[in-house]
Length: 149
Image (cartoon, rainbow, N blue to C red; front, side, top):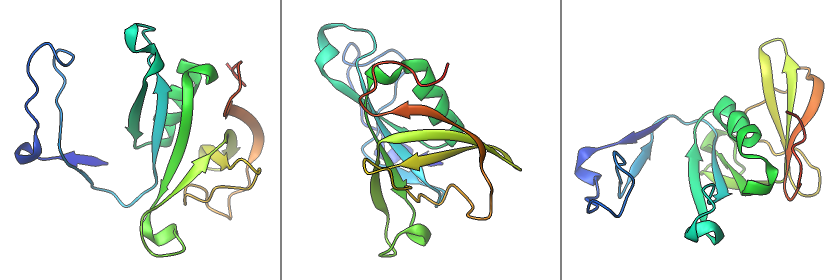
């Protein structure tokens, strides 16, 4: 989903980053599919507990797993990056997400996203012909308790 190139690698001195981590000045979105920006509190609860970490998430299943594993109080925000083919202006666009629902379709588990007003967020992840059943709330912005376990 994301591609990195050696010429854009950013050298970070030892001790200023986690062992084995690599830093990049630029990454390429290699697949024109929806992806997500997930902002979370520092999960270690250390001195940086007031800071948020931001992750770029390429796959719906990884997003669902992260939402369940971290718990709703750890998550500060979620944005869906909408590819050109699905956006109104023909460019990448962003849509804030307030709820994530998980449902069943013929193809398996599918995430259904809603904004703060309860309207569907069309990231192009759901085929309109799919009939979703067994819809369950997975995550809601600002919730203190997990929706499902």
